[in-house]
Length: 291
Image 1 (spheres, rainbow, N blue to C red):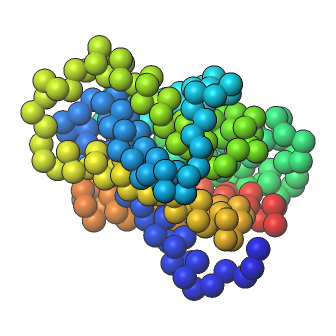
Image 2 (image 1 turned 30 degrees about the horizontal axis):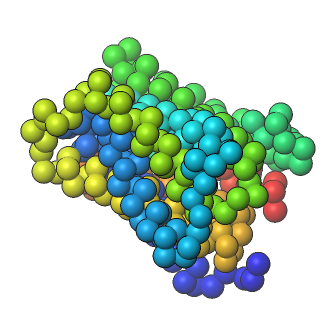
């Protein structure tokens, strides 16, 4: 991989902003839609740009090939479950907390990678980063102003959503030889298939009279934060590699906290800031150990 240029850092920052903006948009979407409907609309609109790109580049979609069950399982764990859990949790907690809680994904993936891969074992630096990062999350849960007995479970569900991303990532290794666009398109198709009956039975969104801002937010979540963001991620990965692309993890909780304040005027306590710093430092040391 060649040395990143200014445009590469700009694209990385845009990707971080897009993913960070998802959290306050999820909050706005919950004003009108239930979590199952939000998950369905995200994968439905997210599939559009990905499948159009596959059609344009003549990339075969293997959603119903002999490996269909892997696409279905990964679609369930990597899209359906986390999209639902995050939307359910954000309804009761501030979106900036969700951004920080979700930023534990690199830390969780390091822990899981130690046990389920051959070349991603713990070392002193990684262990230090994991301890610092998760200490920040534990400290965040001590913020009784923002997390209390009424929404504690919702915050835990967001953490569980983060873990689903990690498990989904490990499962994706089973089909790692396939093209990224094909894998993403296939798991999006299966996520749609899984969510159609669930949405119809549980929430029946056609009976709703949603607010305009909620409608705009779910469309944005699908087209931009899911579809376009994945394509941008592919572009950065191909040109600059995984280590460079993974630096987005530092920026997402920071941007998520800032954007939630700008657009929703959400409260930022000193414990939020301390936990944000701890998580960012933890991610830094975990990533540094891989260089």
